[in-house]
Length: 606
Image (cartoon, rainbow, N blue to C red; front, side):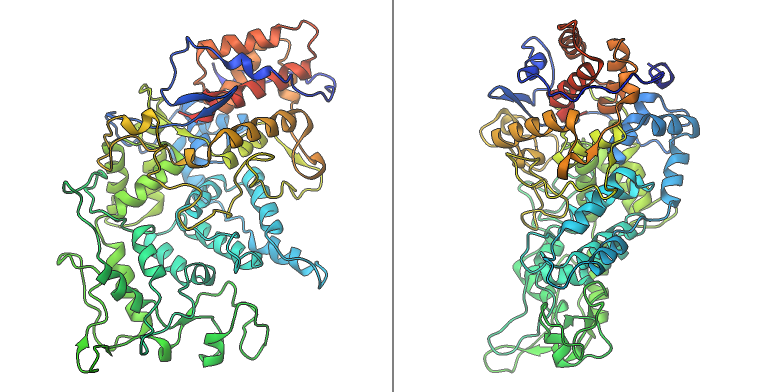
């Protein structure tokens, strides 16, 4: 149905504040429905996960001149924090290509300024934590004009992970806001620049112990943490891949060895705090040091600098101090490997190392697949991965690593634009995305203007996820997580990675988080969310349609489900709305929204 057909007329009078029926979830239960094989129930509630597009022939569309409402809604629900009716209409008017170009051109909305300003108003004895960043995150996720950048930045933050849960970063909101802004600044740039900016940011330096990493002295060897993760998680992965993401050999061939880790670790020696000099005191300053003689006031966000006295050049490290060993083979494949010459500076060593990693053939399929997973689907077909990797390798003008080309390849692929028919298709909508969908779809306003949602980590009393609070460098969930003891792991995979289908988001999905989410939304929908319920939705357009439930569901189906609602679910919700003739307009709207957002069909993004 066209968006013009479901736009609301004049809103009704204010609706009463009332809670949803305790048994309202039962309206979504239908054993006869032929839905996703990955939509399951846990106890009396839903526990759905998702998995995608096996064996689908795919192609990338450079532009959709006149996208349908469904296509526009799909682009917005995958490429932003949620669709709005106005933005759906806008894409349909200007075309998807123009919409992408407009989003690419929009100035970045920064988090650093908000956090920095907020810190300046706190009393001296105030507890410094992640509150200001969380406020800024939600302000921009819901109201930011640069929606595509904000959504891609969130995806990148789950690949290049730093976390407030790290004790050393918990009290660094300004540095963490700067790190997040850095991801956003490079989201539409070149992957090579993004990789270097991540590597040199002091928050990453602290998180993966590259900051103050020192050369070999006696029994002490360089810290290998960042060297390992920059390969395993940020660039090339564990196994050599074909461009379509499949393994090059069976059994798989490792991309690097322990010797490569040890060699690469030497590249990351000598890097520490930025400042006007490179003294030993500045290099060794602790994160809590406030002495102005060795601590630059902006060291929490300025890129790290190299201190030559701590950087490892050519070393003699056999027992007799007589055998000279090149500092790094880096990557042993003769086509892509490279020796770093003797006596190379820290800056030049880093450039050589990152260039080698950037040009490795794994990067396109490895990073491309993760972006597909974060934005579209958990199990993309080989041809989908191949198209994205191809765009990474060459944007059409001979440029490698163009993130704009990669993002368009991810979001304009046939598998992204078209509702899949495979029963294994889709991905679980993670909790942050679900609450963002609700706030954007229904024009939520914050009474304070600050979106005081706070931490939503608690899976029982909240949502089980907060931006930039992943439990480890492996994110909230691993890209290749397989739910144990389920049919997912016994299904034949087309990815070439392993037997079975991947369900990353299911790693934070269990009975506790399912009930926690349902209870949270059951109260948020009618009463609001955040501190003192200060974040409230505006249902005026929906209330105007409450007297015609069919049109109300058409609108909600487009906004929340991209017109994928099955006939059985639609019938169940209509029956629930009409079951009580005394239901107020408000209750009808609340019930419809809750039953959609509680359903496996919504939880599973398709």
